[in-house]
Length: 338
Image (tube, rainbow, N blue to C red):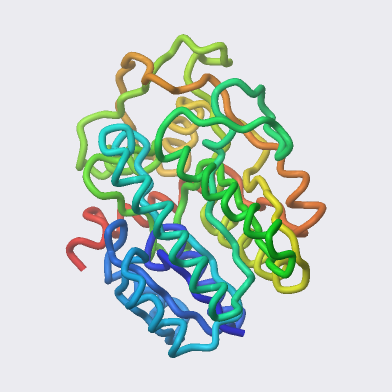
């Protein structure tokens, strides 16, 4: 069975491709390296001992993307490709709407043309907005606070509408919480462009000496230590969720949303303390003002994914910290100096 993975060289994409190859799927990766590095593809081959097809294509290039469909018999698509920085999306919203939504429209148009009606979509817990109380379930009202989140919510709606118009489609909408960690080999991991937007790569970059200290945004939330609480999930568990979602879309039809999280919330300082304990490395931090749009607590109820996909997160916070540190300490500049 052949799976097309858009954005397969990226953080979550690369870990998912490893699991697909290890499960003997044929894999085709499409990526333009806007959020990834070519080195990750070499390391996927190194970890798995397997090869795959790769096309350097931006989804907005319909002609180049169509060649991928023409040249291959594709059974399903896992769609990761998209711009993903919340803050940047506020600064350049038109670029985010054009890239993420138009790219998805071009992809689904070609999927329809070539009769590939099975998709696993990389969505986000940002679609729950700021007004729902955690734990978050898939049936809650949806809203967004930034253009990045809005593109995820709009694409979810587009994919649901496609299913309504043609019930032979099968689509899984995977709402991620906060992916951290890295492959246990330390060969692939999170390598953000510029200053990290997410907590764990910021912590690991401070620990490795790339940054002076961690800024903790807000210590006056209504949480056990005043810092923001989030649901952190190991990227390897997250990749396993995609494997289960592929199995589901191959045998059923429908358009269904699933939370992928642990169901447990940890505060920023919980993560810092667990990291220090797991690695014996001190992480200096300062308290800064809250960021606009941040909420006190956000964590999942992942019961539906367990009941319908047979998936649940297995790895604990200490393992997430150990694996993130193994990646960063072995690759202080990410893939840069490879």
